[in-house]
Length: 249
Image (cartoon, one colour):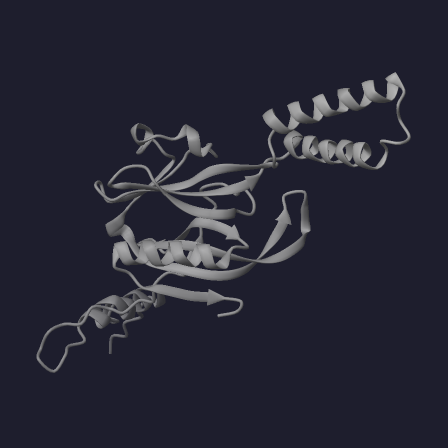
């Protein structure tokens, strides 16, 4: 009697070839009508894109109309290192006015009058030509309803420095058809770039695209009402729903 000794590796390969592929098994599942079902895979988790770059809290968000088909979402942000000379000029004027009103009986010397006039002149110049705040009005993004896209500027630009002709030259462009959802959320956000250890409650407005990216329109703002009105405007124009997530919703 002849005995055949089989190779263990060959047996393993034979069993592997006979086993059905898991993807083929999924594809062969049929509905009652006979149509094959596609394998069901869970969607990838949404991720918050860091693009465009963080610029800090946004104050007084507004929508500004540039033309019949173009709108800009703008807001004020703190400018690091900026000194509001106009504000300090107003403080100096208030101090001089208080000094003139309460000290008229005690200063009649030429030097007192000279110092008061110098302070008054400096205060008027600072108040007239200086900035009243350390915040700058920036363009957060632009919506072009004619070309049906949202454009985020390549860098933080002043609202007065972005025109219709520059639309489309941004760092990030998203077509309306790629947007699947408008998201409005309450989050914890650093109070300032210099104080990352101090968080405050802020509201964020984002859009979700087909790649499950969450792209900020308004990264963070304490102005809940204004941000929500902008969210309703964008959702209404794009005919999308608003999802409320995060703290407080």
